[in-house]
Image (cartoon, rainbow, N blue to C red; front, top):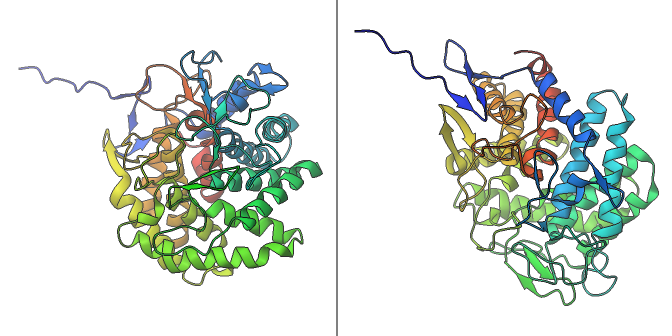
Length: 416
């Protein structure tokens, strides 16, 4: 009787490549795939002076906006996009100014089009959600899980931090000024926090400050914002930074050793107040690993607690590869969170000297790499039939993760 050859595994249109031990390899080298994607995005059409992917969240592989999705996520999409483009610009030894120019275009969109009115408890503060058809966003533009006048304070931290780094790269003071402003608004609304409340709610009406959602899991980017402004001499942020750090150490990190309740809520399109995410603890672990002994003498124990929490609650297997899904309410390995998992696990593996975890991190990143096609067009989720989708999950919250992994393990970029 003839022996049947197993059907090849196909991931996002590519035939999967496994080594003799069953480990997933890349379909092409990281360097080649990332270069194709970044050059593909340099050809993105511009509207109103901005590349379309800076202000449209849902695009297909030909840059056509999805007709049924006009909602957008400005702060996360362009904030993480700025970080991705700055990191890639640095990775290429700052030899290609087009990538810095694109980062500036995303920064300009946040400054010019995506701020609240200059009144209320969160005045001129970066929007978490909005509409792709509004220039600038109107007063009541909240979309997805946000109500019309709501913002998400943590997203102002992401945008403010990205803009401060953009100032350092481009020298344009307006970016720093918005970062400082976001930080001042955050500090003015900061609370002590406790075992059931983060220092800011997940959502707030920017007019009155009325809170909705007692826990906002993503605190590390506000911490980063305070840090970078302190490095520029803004000593006013020393006290709020110390207060935030004490809450993270006393309450949030220990939460990951228990039920993880203080890592609830990050994603703009979800409203369940108990919905925990992988994104927030992973990005806190990244912060701890990047700073190590200079910040936290317990960095190893704390980052281990965070990594174990994510692996325990948010990983599953796809084609035999351990991948990471977003949150309690979404079990899919979207490109943003799975590449975040791979990058942070790579940093952790390097710090603790674990070759097995390094191999798992590389395989997770290889898995996301399969979502880039031969033309450089990424998919937001490997199982979606065509390129495109959520631009954060397809592109802007992905590239910086590969750069972090390449800085940690440089040889991963050239090996196929």
